[in-house]
Amino acid sequence: MIDRTGLAGFLRSRREALQPEDVGLPRGARRRTAGLRREEVAALCHMSVDYYSRLERERGPQPSEQMLASIAQGLHLTRIERDHLFRLAGHRPPVAGVVGEHISPGLLRVLDRLGDTPAEIVTELGETLRQTPLGVALTGDATRFTGPERSLGFRWFTVPAVRERYAPEEHAFLGRMYASGLREITALRGPGSRAAQLADLLLARSGEFRRLWEAHEVGLRPNEVKHFVHPEVGGMELHCQRLVDPDCLHSLMVYTAVPGTESHERLRLLAAVAPPV
Image (tube, rainbow, N blue to C red; front, side):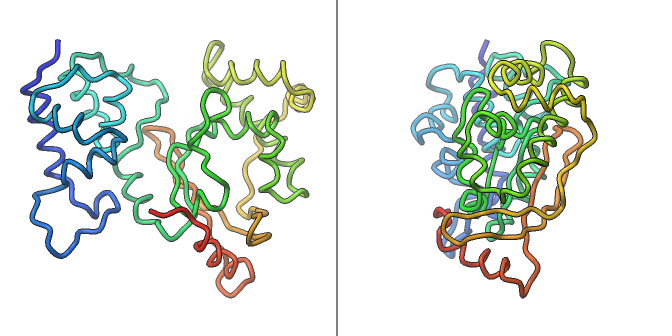
Protein backbone atom coordinates (compact mmCIF):
# COMPACT_ATOMS: atom_id res chain seq x y z
CA MET A 1 0.00 0.00 0.00
CA ILE A 2 1.35 3.41 -0.97
CA ASP A 3 2.37 5.80 1.84
CA ARG A 4 1.61 9.07 0.09
CA THR A 5 2.71 11.31 2.96
CA GLY A 6 5.96 9.42 3.45
CA LEU A 7 6.64 9.28 -0.28
CA ALA A 8 6.03 13.01 -0.74
CA GLY A 9 8.24 13.92 2.19
CA PHE A 10 11.05 11.64 1.04
CA LEU A 11 11.00 13.02 -2.50
CA ARG A 12 11.07 16.62 -1.25
CA SER A 13 13.96 15.92 1.11
CA ARG A 14 16.04 14.21 -1.60
CA ARG A 15 15.30 16.96 -4.13
CA GLU A 16 16.23 19.73 -1.70
CA ALA A 17 19.44 17.91 -0.71
CA LEU A 18 20.71 17.82 -4.31
CA GLN A 19 22.63 20.79 -5.71
CA PRO A 20 22.75 21.64 -9.44
CA GLU A 21 26.45 20.80 -9.63
CA ASP A 22 25.70 17.35 -8.19
CA VAL A 23 23.82 16.46 -11.39
CA GLY A 24 25.85 18.44 -13.91
CA LEU A 25 23.55 21.49 -14.08
CA PRO A 26 24.65 25.16 -13.93
CA ARG A 27 23.73 26.93 -10.70
CA GLY A 28 22.88 30.33 -12.15
CA ALA A 29 23.43 33.72 -10.52
CA ARG A 30 19.87 34.29 -9.22
CA ARG A 31 19.12 30.85 -7.89
CA ARG A 32 17.08 30.92 -4.65
CA THR A 33 15.62 27.40 -4.57
CA ALA A 34 16.96 25.09 -1.87
CA GLY A 35 18.36 22.21 -3.89
CA LEU A 36 16.89 21.38 -7.28
CA ARG A 37 13.69 22.73 -8.79
CA ARG A 38 10.83 20.33 -9.50
CA GLU A 39 11.16 20.91 -13.24
CA GLU A 40 14.86 20.00 -13.06
CA VAL A 41 14.12 16.76 -11.23
CA ALA A 42 11.32 15.92 -13.66
CA ALA A 43 13.73 16.32 -16.57
CA LEU A 44 16.35 14.15 -14.86
CA CYS A 45 13.68 11.49 -14.24
CA HIS A 46 12.31 11.67 -17.81
CA MET A 47 8.77 12.54 -16.74
CA SER A 48 6.42 15.51 -16.85
CA VAL A 49 6.68 18.25 -14.25
CA ASP A 50 2.98 17.78 -13.46
CA TYR A 51 3.44 14.06 -12.72
CA TYR A 52 6.39 14.60 -10.41
CA SER A 53 4.77 17.59 -8.68
CA ARG A 54 1.66 15.56 -7.87
CA LEU A 55 3.78 12.96 -6.11
CA GLU A 56 5.31 15.63 -3.89
CA ARG A 57 1.79 16.89 -3.15
CA GLU A 58 0.52 13.45 -2.13
CA ARG A 59 -1.60 13.12 -5.26
CA GLY A 60 -1.66 11.22 -8.53
CA PRO A 61 -1.61 7.49 -9.35
CA GLN A 62 0.65 4.93 -7.73
CA PRO A 63 4.00 5.06 -9.57
CA SER A 64 4.99 1.93 -11.46
CA GLU A 65 8.21 0.10 -10.72
CA GLN A 66 9.69 1.45 -13.95
CA MET A 67 8.77 5.00 -12.95
CA LEU A 68 10.26 4.53 -9.49
CA ALA A 69 13.51 3.26 -11.00
CA SER A 70 13.65 6.40 -13.13
CA ILE A 71 13.00 8.62 -10.11
CA ALA A 72 15.66 6.83 -8.07
CA GLN A 73 18.19 7.36 -10.83
CA GLY A 74 17.22 10.98 -11.43
CA LEU A 75 17.53 11.82 -7.72
CA HIS A 76 20.88 10.01 -7.50
CA LEU A 77 19.60 7.72 -4.73
CA THR A 78 21.76 5.06 -3.17
CA ARG A 79 20.53 1.48 -3.40
CA ILE A 80 19.25 1.64 0.19
CA GLU A 81 17.39 4.88 -0.58
CA ARG A 82 16.03 3.36 -3.79
CA ASP A 83 14.67 0.37 -1.86
CA HIS A 84 13.07 2.73 0.66
CA LEU A 85 11.43 4.63 -2.21
CA PHE A 86 9.96 1.41 -3.59
CA ARG A 87 8.50 0.47 -0.20
CA LEU A 88 6.96 3.91 0.33
CA ALA A 89 5.29 3.59 -3.09
CA GLY A 90 3.85 0.18 -2.22
CA HIS A 91 6.24 -1.99 -4.26
CA ARG A 92 8.81 -4.59 -3.37
CA PRO A 93 12.37 -3.40 -3.99
CA PRO A 94 14.40 -5.14 -6.72
CA VAL A 95 15.84 -8.45 -5.54
CA ALA A 96 19.19 -8.00 -3.82
CA GLY A 97 22.16 -9.50 -5.60
CA VAL A 98 20.65 -9.26 -9.08
CA VAL A 99 22.69 -7.21 -11.52
CA GLY A 100 20.50 -4.22 -12.36
CA GLU A 101 20.58 -0.85 -14.06
CA HIS A 102 20.58 1.45 -11.02
CA ILE A 103 23.75 3.53 -11.31
CA SER A 104 25.42 4.51 -8.05
CA PRO A 105 25.37 8.25 -7.22
CA GLY A 106 29.16 8.33 -7.10
CA LEU A 107 29.53 6.98 -10.62
CA LEU A 108 26.89 9.41 -11.87
CA ARG A 109 28.72 12.34 -10.27
CA VAL A 110 31.91 11.36 -12.06
CA LEU A 111 30.10 11.07 -15.39
CA ASP A 112 28.37 14.43 -14.88
CA ARG A 113 31.79 16.08 -14.59
CA LEU A 114 33.01 14.62 -17.88
CA GLY A 115 30.87 16.73 -20.16
CA ASP A 116 33.81 17.63 -22.42
CA THR A 117 35.02 14.02 -22.73
CA PRO A 118 33.58 10.95 -24.50
CA ALA A 119 32.42 8.65 -21.72
CA GLU A 120 29.71 6.10 -20.98
CA ILE A 121 28.44 3.83 -18.21
CA VAL A 122 27.84 0.23 -19.29
CA THR A 123 26.62 -3.00 -17.70
CA GLU A 124 28.57 -6.26 -17.70
CA LEU A 125 26.66 -7.22 -20.86
CA GLY A 126 27.78 -4.09 -22.70
CA GLU A 127 24.47 -2.24 -22.36
CA THR A 128 25.03 1.52 -22.33
CA LEU A 129 23.07 3.18 -19.52
CA ARG A 130 24.37 6.75 -19.80
CA GLN A 131 26.60 8.71 -22.18
CA THR A 132 28.12 12.16 -22.20
CA PRO A 133 27.24 14.31 -25.23
CA LEU A 134 30.71 13.63 -26.67
CA GLY A 135 30.16 9.93 -26.03
CA VAL A 136 27.04 10.09 -28.19
CA ALA A 137 28.98 12.01 -30.85
CA LEU A 138 31.70 9.35 -30.88
CA THR A 139 29.68 6.15 -31.15
CA GLY A 140 26.05 7.29 -31.61
CA ASP A 141 23.23 7.13 -29.07
CA ALA A 142 23.71 3.65 -27.65
CA THR A 143 20.96 4.12 -25.04
CA ARG A 144 18.17 4.07 -27.64
CA PHE A 145 18.22 0.32 -28.21
CA THR A 146 15.75 -2.11 -26.65
CA GLY A 147 15.70 -5.85 -26.03
CA PRO A 148 18.81 -7.92 -26.86
CA GLU A 149 20.15 -5.14 -29.09
CA ARG A 150 20.92 -3.08 -26.01
CA SER A 151 24.07 -5.20 -25.73
CA LEU A 152 26.93 -3.99 -27.95
CA GLY A 153 28.20 -7.57 -28.17
CA PHE A 154 24.83 -8.69 -29.50
CA ARG A 155 24.69 -5.85 -32.03
CA TRP A 156 28.23 -6.66 -33.15
CA PHE A 157 27.06 -9.97 -34.60
CA THR A 158 23.57 -8.94 -35.75
CA VAL A 159 23.75 -5.30 -36.90
CA PRO A 160 26.51 -4.87 -39.52
CA ALA A 161 26.42 -1.06 -39.36
CA VAL A 162 27.78 -1.17 -35.79
CA ARG A 163 31.23 -2.11 -37.07
CA GLU A 164 31.53 1.02 -39.20
CA ARG A 165 32.63 3.05 -36.16
CA TYR A 166 35.58 0.72 -35.47
CA ALA A 167 38.80 0.31 -37.47
CA PRO A 168 38.58 -2.77 -39.77
CA GLU A 169 41.87 -4.19 -38.47
CA GLU A 170 40.30 -4.55 -35.01
CA HIS A 171 37.09 -6.32 -36.10
CA ALA A 172 38.43 -9.86 -35.73
CA PHE A 173 39.76 -9.26 -32.22
CA LEU A 174 36.59 -7.48 -31.10
CA GLY A 175 34.44 -10.39 -32.28
CA ARG A 176 36.61 -12.84 -30.33
CA MET A 177 36.51 -10.58 -27.28
CA TYR A 178 32.71 -10.26 -27.25
CA ALA A 179 32.25 -14.02 -27.61
CA SER A 180 34.85 -14.66 -24.91
CA GLY A 181 33.29 -12.17 -22.51
CA LEU A 182 29.78 -13.53 -22.99
CA ARG A 183 31.02 -17.07 -22.35
CA GLU A 184 32.60 -15.98 -19.07
CA ILE A 185 29.49 -14.09 -17.91
CA THR A 186 27.24 -16.99 -18.89
CA ALA A 187 29.31 -19.36 -16.75
CA LEU A 188 29.25 -16.85 -13.88
CA ARG A 189 25.50 -16.14 -13.98
CA GLY A 190 24.38 -19.63 -14.94
CA PRO A 191 21.61 -21.15 -17.10
CA GLY A 192 18.51 -18.99 -17.42
CA SER A 193 20.47 -15.77 -16.94
CA ARG A 194 20.24 -12.88 -19.38
CA ALA A 195 23.76 -13.71 -20.52
CA ALA A 196 22.70 -17.27 -21.35
CA GLN A 197 19.66 -15.97 -23.24
CA LEU A 198 21.86 -13.65 -25.32
CA ALA A 199 24.19 -16.53 -26.11
CA ASP A 200 21.29 -18.72 -27.25
CA LEU A 201 19.95 -15.96 -29.49
CA LEU A 202 23.35 -15.38 -31.06
CA LEU A 203 23.94 -19.08 -31.61
CA ALA A 204 20.69 -19.18 -33.56
CA ARG A 205 21.34 -16.01 -35.59
CA SER A 206 25.06 -15.70 -36.27
CA GLY A 207 27.36 -18.21 -37.91
CA GLU A 208 30.36 -16.09 -36.97
CA PHE A 209 29.35 -16.14 -33.32
CA ARG A 210 28.81 -19.92 -33.41
CA ARG A 211 32.34 -20.42 -34.75
CA LEU A 212 33.86 -18.19 -32.06
CA TRP A 213 31.69 -19.72 -29.33
CA GLU A 214 32.80 -23.23 -30.24
CA ALA A 215 36.44 -22.16 -29.75
CA HIS A 216 35.74 -21.86 -25.98
CA GLU A 217 38.09 -18.90 -25.76
CA VAL A 218 38.04 -16.98 -22.47
CA GLY A 219 40.19 -14.33 -20.82
CA LEU A 220 40.32 -11.77 -23.63
CA ARG A 221 40.23 -8.19 -22.40
CA PRO A 222 39.77 -4.89 -24.28
CA ASN A 223 42.87 -3.14 -25.53
CA GLU A 224 43.62 0.14 -23.80
CA VAL A 225 44.07 1.85 -27.17
CA LYS A 226 41.01 1.77 -29.42
CA HIS A 227 40.75 2.89 -33.03
CA PHE A 228 37.50 4.58 -33.97
CA VAL A 229 36.31 5.69 -37.40
CA HIS A 230 34.00 8.68 -37.17
CA PRO A 231 31.94 9.53 -40.27
CA GLU A 232 32.66 13.27 -39.96
CA VAL A 233 36.07 13.73 -38.31
CA GLY A 234 37.78 10.52 -39.45
CA GLY A 235 39.96 8.01 -37.65
CA MET A 236 40.95 8.46 -34.00
CA GLU A 237 43.29 6.55 -31.72
CA LEU A 238 41.83 6.86 -28.22
CA HIS A 239 42.93 5.51 -24.88
CA CYS A 240 40.16 3.92 -22.81
CA GLN A 241 40.26 4.07 -19.01
CA ARG A 242 37.77 1.91 -17.12
CA LEU A 243 36.41 2.55 -13.64
CA VAL A 244 34.38 -0.33 -12.17
CA ASP A 245 31.69 0.00 -9.51
CA PRO A 246 32.01 -3.30 -7.59
CA ASP A 247 28.56 -3.03 -6.02
CA CYS A 248 26.54 -2.52 -9.21
CA LEU A 249 29.04 -4.17 -11.60
CA HIS A 250 28.85 -1.17 -13.89
CA SER A 251 31.84 0.28 -15.72
CA LEU A 252 32.59 3.91 -16.51
CA MET A 253 34.48 4.05 -19.81
CA VAL A 254 36.41 7.26 -20.53
CA TYR A 255 38.05 7.91 -23.90
CA THR A 256 40.98 10.33 -24.26
CA ALA A 257 43.62 11.18 -26.85
CA VAL A 258 47.31 11.96 -26.35
CA PRO A 259 47.75 15.77 -26.44
CA GLY A 260 49.44 17.07 -29.54
CA THR A 261 48.38 14.18 -31.74
CA GLU A 262 46.08 14.25 -34.74
CA SER A 263 43.58 12.20 -32.75
CA HIS A 264 43.57 14.87 -30.04
CA GLU A 265 42.75 17.55 -32.62
CA ARG A 266 39.99 15.40 -34.12
CA LEU A 267 38.56 14.81 -30.67
CA ARG A 268 38.29 18.58 -30.29
CA LEU A 269 36.52 18.77 -33.64
CA LEU A 270 34.11 16.10 -32.40
CA ALA A 271 32.70 18.63 -29.93
CA ALA A 272 31.25 20.53 -32.88
CA VAL A 273 29.00 17.60 -33.80
CA ALA A 274 28.14 16.62 -30.24
CA PRO A 275 24.43 16.84 -29.26
CA PRO A 276 23.47 19.80 -27.03
CA VAL A 277 23.55 19.24 -23.28
